[in-house]
Image (cartoon, rainbow, N blue to C red; front, top):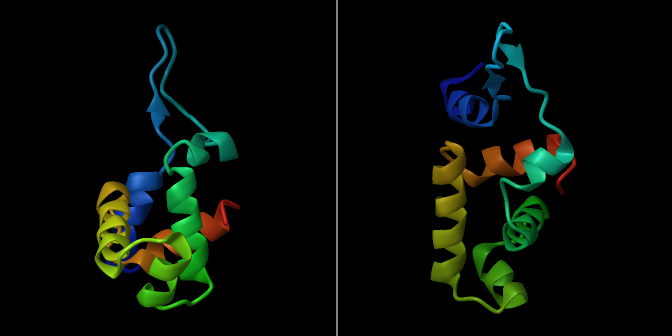
Length: 98
């Protein structure tokens, strides 16, 4: 696995749940668990990025400035531990969010 994907994997790995009187168990993340990690606006942004649209076109479709699209994309990457938006797009696609 490349160093670039480690951040996303680490940020999105299912949490280990410690239950009283039990050994730790892996919590399998459901689609609804994953869905809570990103907002509807972020899903729309990711879907447009996945379509390969340039930032300017995404901004027009979302009625935002180019700078706001870039800032939101970067904030999403930072929150999920990704170095590039494509990593978050790939994660969202693999998990059926887009």
